[in-house]
Length: 471
Image (cartoon, rainbow, N blue to C red; front, side, top):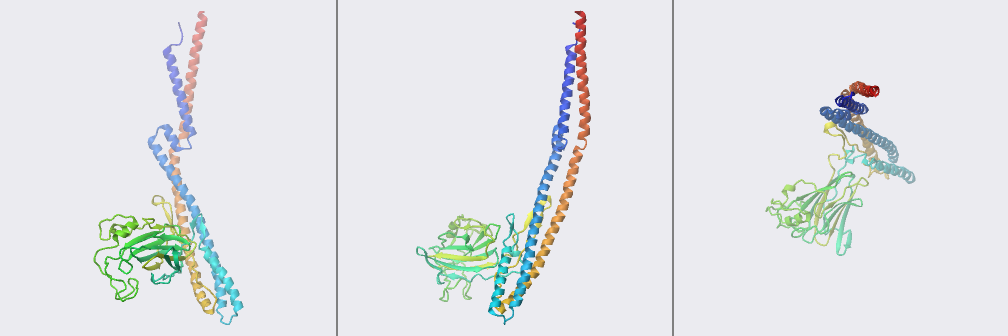
């Protein structure tokens, strides 16, 4: 019978299928023309896909960094607002102090001045505790005026007790000092014995360091068996401690002159050396450490900063108080020496980004330490004027730091914008011809499809006409 052959019909069907597939492919690429990665994936361009994905990821990272920088700008603005408020307070306090210098001022007038001065002083201290989105605004160690504080030369069981029968037959001794800073380094030398003591360091009412019950050593507290804890703390960071075995001589008494003296307090006392750390088994057990085979058993741990180790526990400090309390709980002889020192390097550095995307580190800003300033007497008022003059001078220094930090952010922000722009240009070049190319390709495939459909229709129509003629 005369009609369309199966071979020609198959060819027309294949052409129509190819054209339909081509149209579908072009449609998908056109729909994804705004996404370089998807367009490259549709086209099967592995190299282009890899480049588009990398550039896209970099831009997303930089967008997040840009958002962080904006938050940092707000953070700096909050710091600046606090410093301006502090400057106003200091100016008013300085005026009140100048008036209170007059020795002939009546008690009632001085009381009025002192009341206002104390209120302003407390307001200035409250500023130091301000935060922004959980981040501390000011770092005491960055303050313009710094003061070292002697915490105490030492304690022994002969020191008057703070609490007797504190817990059962355990007594407690406490020394509390205002160290002026909310961060610091506390060095504690302890010498107990086999009975064991508990050594605690508190910031306000918060326990930030605790040796736990029964920190025991060999012998008794009259031997050269001192060991050292170096406790570092500060708001916004973990409290850490280093443990340093101090004595490797164990047979000499500490009270060589017959008095109970803390190690090192007497010129005639010399720590003997026999290279035998008799406390070794005790402190290793207390710290939960294995003997590393060195004379002290822990030379490999020298300089290690622990948080919670063995029975010793630490808790992060806060910025609510500058008061430190050293507590000893004991049932027998003990000796202890403690010293507070101000950290030399501020801890509140804020870094945005990382080394791969141009990081920015903001220098910490401090504010005045006005804990022990008063105008209750003419002499105290004169000292207050001097202190406030220094603090007002310090405000200018801190404002300069804020200006430098803001400049860093502006420069980094501009650099970041340029990088994002160049990345977007790179992505744009990858996709610039997609719309035109795919539109043209789609039109071609539509023409091919329509041609195939027309031929198919004509073939069936011709076959039908011939059949009708014959019949």
